[in-house]
Image (cartoon, rainbow, N blue to C red; front, side, top):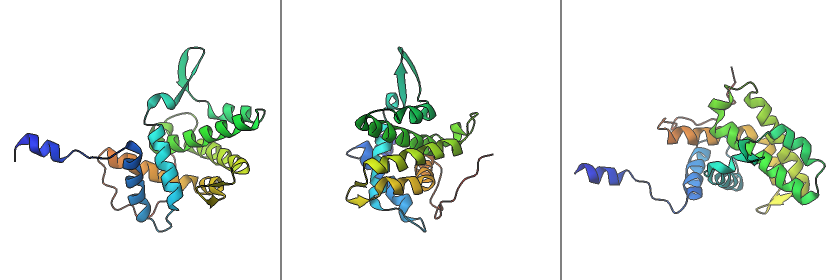
Length: 180
């Protein structure tokens, strides 16, 4: 086999980035002793797809690109009209989940550790559940995300490591990784 043929055989064909992430998250979830419902795996794949465009991870304020300040956004969301609150809470929860999963190694190097962002994500999803108590025909969907936030973040973390070439086939039980 020529080198060009072997390079071609290594290409992963997917119809979308979301489908690619869903397949990977689904495989990780199947190995867990306490798997999550498929609806939460699907939702997590949507989050990973959404943040596949890096500009969605940041915000522009006064013409400058910067990281979202999730704690401030959570406080500000309380005084907003209901539709704006729903949008803000979802963005806070989704951003915190992605950050705690995909970027957990770099977050641990910051002054504010992962536990802070985990709590922000949990609070945002818990509040969002009061506005949207059912999603994908799953009652209390955002409460599930809040309760299993750590688990979802670990799944996203494992998928990120798989994509870096780390073998995670032996990850049968997701446990809380403690930050140093």
